[in-house]
Every structure is written in structure tokens, then in C-alpha cells.
Length: 545
Image (tube, rainbow, N blue to C red):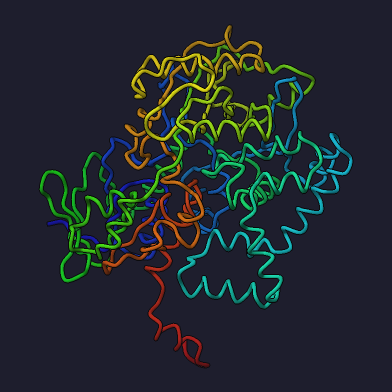
């Protein structure tokens, strides 16, 4: 029977970062992945559409990772392994139906000028809100990078209380709960400003009218200005291979096409896992499960391994809206319409939307089970950053539609498409994609003529690629307040430690939530390698080390 210090179930970025950090500390580590490739939502294909075109099948952009504590710690080693990030000073824009556009740049001066271009007062408003946010940025980012159910979380709260006082802390806490709609409309006069910020809420798994979406808008706005929109040259597979190499070069294993069917528990402690073929792999120190609560408590653990209240809560865990991906190989670069065509062509991500109300309407229609009549199109242009992603003179588009119904489709808000029994058939998938591409064609004038090949992934297809993306929810579960922050994944089992000694829970379903920031993997690796409290106390005694 193979035995390791730690076993990771699943090979997403949280697993690979956590495993790499443990391997650096001398742990023997095994990463087990049921798919034929490692990386979870980082999945690079060189022939998805046509040979020579490099597509990120699911997640594509890495600003959360390059801004993370994990990257800061691993950067030197990743550099040595050939991971090179490319960035830009123009990370995003929004193309509106009337041909106008708005942008978020990589500098304070640029954003003051850009927001002031539409309404003069909005330039000063951007500067004011950014400076106010940065005054407490350590608290805001700390909220999203700290193990909240821990001494570190308590320390963060004490820090906030000392700095802000009781009334100030209450105000700060209330600000984290505000909706995007309330925040942008009270901060900026221009609907253009609202329209360039609101679509980013979708990338947090929220809608613009939900609690905490205003706080996340502020976080994203600051992050875009400070960190841009980085991508690894040659594709996300470069990062995956580098992290996996750190594990295997240290004597660990990354095993593919192995299905973990049970986490083994003896006397209240996780002791290993059983695979689909009956093989048992032992873990002497930790089992780290990068799975959804539904999988962890519904199938991987036995009925008596955890309290029944936790099992029942996991059965009630809610998944959020679904998404669709459309990948297009182009014979030439996209040609944007309107007076801002040159800047739009330089943006890694352009949102195509009528604005705040358009985003809100799309979310509302999706949450009522309808295909949106005019959903927000997140139009990714990887070649704008990394020309190696396509043959010379050609290009690709990465389209993301994040406003689709969770589960069965009940109807079409536009009244145009026959949704049948609500399942994602090939006909429904391609018909909805046709609508999206037709709309995008009004903004990219050569889209139809330049398209060489198109591949569409429905929510069902996306779940087929990664079982953590239940019904096409790429965010690991609803990010509504009762399943977020202190309460993620479950109020009955928050944080990353579980009721089983030595079993840890990571991934998008856990704090700090979805994205490629590797936050949960980093936090758990640090908890596992933290010296015992007696050693920490002795280290503070003068003359002791």
C-alpha cells in the first residue's frame, strides 16, 4: 500500500499550490486526479478548434494568482521553471450597443482621466473612492486572504477595531454588504461608469443587486488598476506543469485518471483514500479534498464519519448560475466598431452589455430559469497579450456567458428559442450560441467573415469536464451571503478544517471562494506546516531560536 504524508483529492490550482508548498517543506505528497489532465479549471488545448490555436478551455486569466501570497512565495521557483507572465496597462473595457466604449486602465491617473471623460465629476470620484479603499486595503484584502475561523481571523478583527473604532468598524462592515447597484450609482454619475464596473460582479459569482457585490466591485476595481490582467505565456498549462513538477521532483506523485471513491476514516481521523479499482493510498498526516460539499459529505465520507447536521447541511448546499463558453479561431484579428476600436482591440477582456441594468436583467432572467434575451458577453482576447496563442496574423476569442439558468432551462426570455424539456441538447446549445455571436457581430465587424472554427461548451459540457462545476456553475456553489465569507462552505462546517481530524476541505466551494488565487490551498498548506504552539512560544523567549 502506497503511503504519503498528504494526499490531495483533485488537481485544481488550490491542490497544486498546496502540494507544492508542502513538498518544499519536505512532505511526501500525492495528488490524485480523475481526469486525463491535471489543473482543474486551468485546461489548455492546442487543438480545441484547429491545430496551432491555443485555447484556455475554462479559466483563462491569472491576475488573482499573480497578486496572491502563493505566487509571491513560489515566484522564484516558477520563474526557474519557465513560467512567464505577460501583463497590460489596459486590462478591460466595455463596448456598448451605441458603439461607445469605456475602460479601466492600469494607473490612477489613467482612470481619473477615463472616468472624467464621460462626466467630469466621476474622475474625482474614482480617485476619492480608490484612495479611501486603499486606506484600509489591508483589511479588505485580508478579509479575502485570511482563515477567518482562526486566530489570524480574530487578529484581523482586532486590528480593524483598533484602527477604526466601534463606529468605524460598523461602517466598514456595512460597506462590505452593499450591492454593486447601490455603490456605483451613489459613487458615479455616469451610466458609462456603471457599465464598465457592473459586469465584473459576474466574475465573482454574484449579481449587481446582491449583498457584498458592491464591496467586490471595489476590490476588483482596485485590483485591475494595481495588477492588470496577466496571463502565462503559452497558456495556463505552463503553470500547471511547473507546480506539478515541484511535487514530482521532490519525490511526490501526480496521478491522473484515478477516481477517489472514499476517504478512509479510523477513530475519527482521516487515514487515506480508496480508489475506484480498490487500491488504498494511505495518508499519515493529512487528506486534503478539493471537491464540493455535496461530494465530500454525500459520497466521499461515510454516514457516521461526521455529525448528521453537517451531512444534512451539505445536502442543502446551493449551486449558482451556469455558464457557457464559446471558443472561436479567427483568420485575422478582431476589428471592433466605433471610435474606440483601437483601445478595444488591446483589451484582454471586453464586456459587451447595455450596462448596469443589462447585467441586472440578464441575471434576473437566468435566476428565473430563462435564457437571457441580451446576456452579458465577456469577450476575451488572449492574443492581445500573448501572440503565441495563434498562428501569425490570426487570432482567437474566448467568450464567457455567465447568466444562464442553474439546472433545467424553463424558457427563453426573448421568446425565440424552443428549449424543449430544458436539457442542454446540441441544438439548444448551438442556437443560443448563434444568438450570442450574432450580437457580438455588431461590435466586431469582421467576426462572421473571419471565423474559421467555433466550439461551444454548454453548462452540461462544462460539468462533464470537471465534476466540481455542478450543472455548469464555475464558482463551486452560490456565493450568496449565507454561503460566503464566514459561512463558506456551510454555516455548520465553515473554514477548511472538518470534523474529521486530518481532513481538510479546499477549492472554490470554500473560503475565499472561486477564482485562480489559490487562497484555500495556500491557507491549508500554511496551517499544516505551522510549528506547534509550544515551539512558537519558545521562539519568543530571548536566547531561544
